[in-house]
Image (cartoon, rainbow, N blue to C red):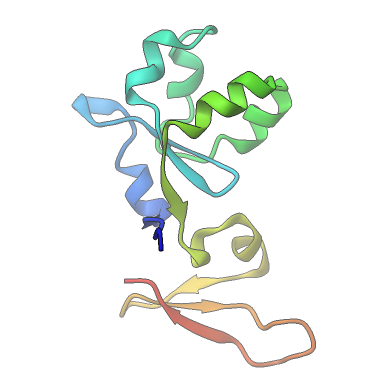
Amino acid sequence: MVTTKEYTRQEVALRDGKNGAQTWIIIRDVVYDVTTYLEDHPGGGELITEFAGKDGTRDFDDFGHSGTAMNLLKQFKIGELNMCDRAKFQKQGSEWLPDGACVLPPKKRSKRRRFIFCG
């Protein structure tokens, strides 16, 4: 069984490419380390570093990357965002608790919020 490493948005934000840090980006809740790709990007590394440590999904999709670009991106995947930090749950109101637990919004037809530990 292959387990996928999970990261928080806070962890990704630390990899903003500044002061020698790695350059990580988020595309569709997947975390990519694109540090080694910056110089090879056809549009220039600046287009990527604009989203270093952040979610670049909207701009990535708006540009309309080719299938080749989508396949190339796969080789830079290092993990995924944990459940609490995924876009879907952020929009629905997930929240972090001080002890590292996360409160997810209730499932449809339920009023009970769900707690998960993401620490």
